[in-house]
Image (tube, rainbow, N blue to C red; front, side, top):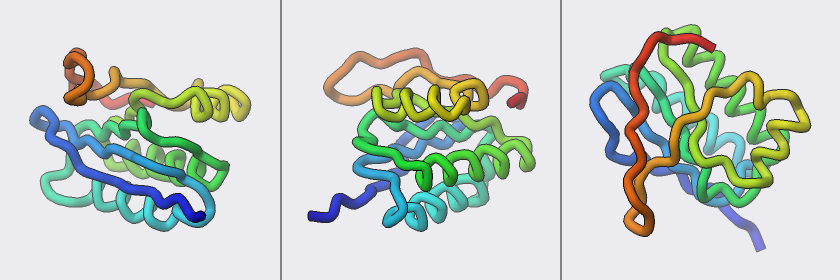
Length: 128
């Protein structure tokens, strides 16, 4: 059985673009993830902040992590802040094992109908 990756754009405050990942980010779905991240960073109007909601990401392999790292670099090169939100235990462990937890900045998990609304991410100065 193949598990796909679904990437949805969600409503976000002005200047913020929110992508929600659902499924698995691995070798088979890395192209889907790369394309969605590229469009999120380049579609007009270009966001001040890109938040990638990983709360429904069931699995992330090194291929998925590589796409997140590439997107982070592209975001910073284009003066867009890049944030991960709600990483699963598996993704948090992958980030810790690879040392990339020190590279990614985190945002509060976005509101979903089944949980209360957190504070919205802000579009502060663009750093790491």
